Length: 427
Image (tube, rainbow, N blue to C red; front, side, top):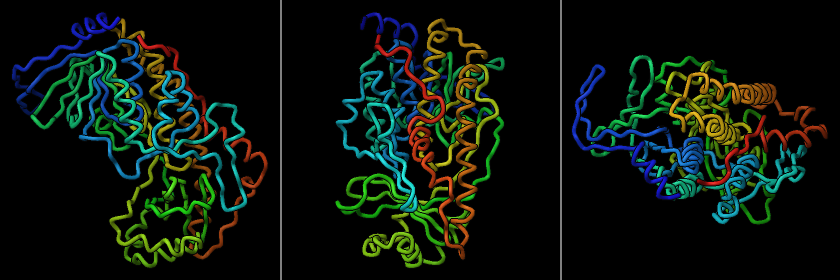
């Protein structure tokens, strides 16, 4: 079987070191030209999962990641039950859980509303908090077991190759210069700042967001509540994620108000944190300067069309998700699973049609639109009063109803229409 995979790799993935000069408005000294079946741009959760699922089926795939490593601060670190079920379906869940992680099995909002993930009927009734860098490293190491998988780090894609209205691959810059990668299918999975989206010129629908986030960490005491805590005060809110010995904290501010918060000074920020969470009074001094605080400009949108001939976008490249609810990784990975399920056979045949690409969007667009509408509605309803500086926040009635405690874990844990791997066994 391994020999067959190697023969397939030799047939579908060729490389030459003959320099070439090309093209489209500017000339590049091309160091190498490769040919593969599927080129995936972006080594985040969606791109890595898709590459692994295709490689397991013997489909040649090259994954291009612009950075030299997976280390990023304050990336999404939540693996929802639906993601863990996918890991279980391909036989990786037990090994994955051997990596350092914490488990969140409850969500406490304002001290009076609670969502308990233990009500879920799954082997994984919790949200797994794991450093995304560890998760991605684990998956790429697993993918390297398959000869038809290649990973190029430090490969910054800057151009699409287009011929007769068809995307035929990409040109990227690495440390040694320009390279060309041609493919039957190019998948843009390069996140919320997707360059592939810009190059493709696809139209978007944007949802106005009422907030931005400041991310930072404070130490956590062993006897403090586990899981997620949400605290409110006048004009701001804190979302505290249990990271074992630390709280990873999102401080909610009004959209576009970061400069005002910064100008007010670090001590004013510390005081507002304590107002929402008095138990943090001694620990806010751990914020020594603004370098320990990252600002996330919250945005949400979706492409009107996720594809062009030869090109498909998934994950945040197709639909930027608000961080509220931690849905971004979950939906990106579900996109990847659906893509592998729908396109594996067309990729094997060497004929991926526009109709095939449209099937992926048709499968994943409605769940995305539903969750975006739900999150947008919740944000508008709650944050309007949360961010009013002279108003004491009152928890909305719907959050105090028993129905919330039953529905919230299911929506947060599985999302709308969770996907399952159709081909679980490796080739």
